[in-house]
Amino acid sequence: MNESRVLCRIDEIPDSGAISVLIDSSTGGFEVILLRQGDQVFGYHNECPHQGRHLDYVPGKFLIKDGRIICAAHGAMFLVSSGDCVSGPCSNGLARVPVRVEGGEVRFA
Ligand code: FES
Image 1 (cartoon, protein in one colour):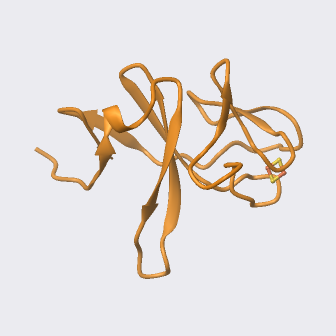
Image 2: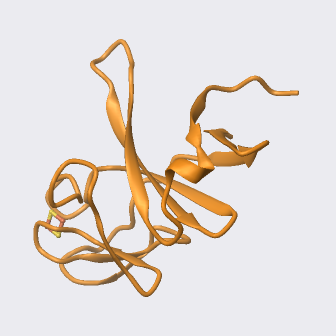
Image 3: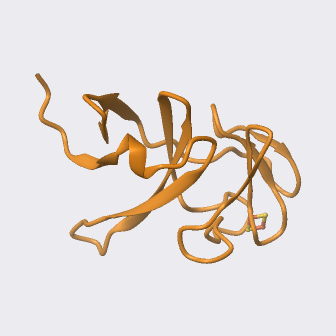
């Protein structure tokens, strides 16, 4: 069994919603967005490929509609399931952070 780091419990993420978690590192850490769709969780760096801003409108609060997450800065839209940019001022998708759900816990994959 892989003992990778626990990021949160899946029930801490609202279904069809998201939270952010801060990952400590020797270079100061970074934020990961954890988006939930039922039993699935998708992870991305909280950094928009348009101008590098955080996607949340206030810390930890995200605009999500119809399976898409919308950057609060200028409205770029990304698919929750892939991070692909589908609309707005972006040409690249979100940087994926592989995660998995195991025993109700969300962990790095
Ligand atoms: S920084 Fe996200 S759309 Fe501009």
